[in-house]
Structure formats: C-alpha cells, structure tokens
Length: 154
Picture 1 (cartoon, rainbow, N blue to C red):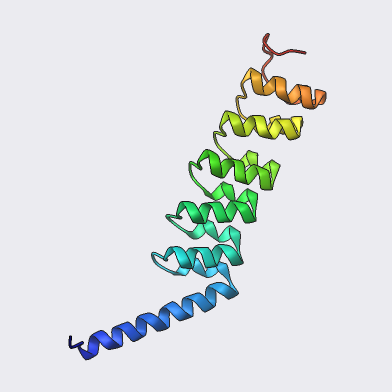
Picture 2 (picture 1 turned 120 degrees about the vertical axis):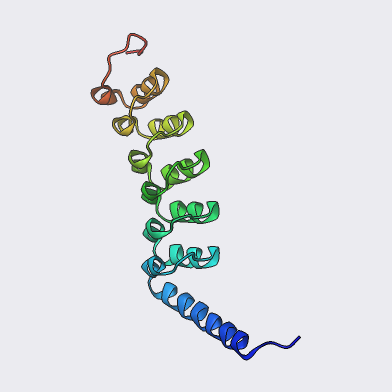
C-alpha cells in the first residue's frame, strides 16, 4: 500500500491536533466548546477537568453524563431528559440538585424527601405519597406543600 504524500501529511496533522486538544483539555475543560464533534475520550477529559463543561457538549454519551453528575451533582441542569440512573446519581451527590430536574421520577423524589423533607419545595406537583414521606421526615415541610389534599396524613 502506497500512501500519498498528502495522506501522510493529513495523518500527521490529525495526530498533532489530537495531541493539542488533549493537552488543552487537561489544562482547561472549557476548551471542549471549540472542538467540533469531540470523541468520547475528549469529552471525558473535559469533564475530568471541569464537570460544568458538559454544557458545551452537544451530544454527550451516557458515560459522559454519568461522570459529570458523579463529580458535581448540579451538572444535571445541562442534561436534557436525564435517565433515572443519572437523576439518582445527581441527587446522591448533591440533594439540592433535584431543583434542576424537570420531571424527577417518583423514586428520585422519594429518595430526596427521605433525606430531607424540606426538599419538597423543589418538586413540582409531588404525589400525595411524596408529600406524606416529606412530612414524616420533616413536619415543617408542610409549609412547602402548595396544594391542600385530603389524602395527606397530617
């Protein structure tokens, strides 16, 4: 196989760019915003250095999302439609990150209010089961419950 001179130069340039991107991302994860279609490896390097840099990644892989919320729970604010697994990882890292989840699953809601009942203030339209769990944990959480349901055990 004979490689053309242009192909060899292209491969060398590609390696240089990859090396420079790796080096820059290790110094500053926010550099990811200047890389078009970064590989998963580059995304993970960026997240390692700065978890908030996930906001500049257009299509993060599941692995990248998991790593970001494991490092910093409130990074979930930059993830659209996070899976239940990612939601749980985020709230386990930082309970108050539930405020950044549009529609947390019931399991995630119950986990949060079982740790601190007052977190119900961040949950839009909690079910009566979640409201009851919050009030059992922290009776003062009743001040954060907006609707007055007859099903709530007081």
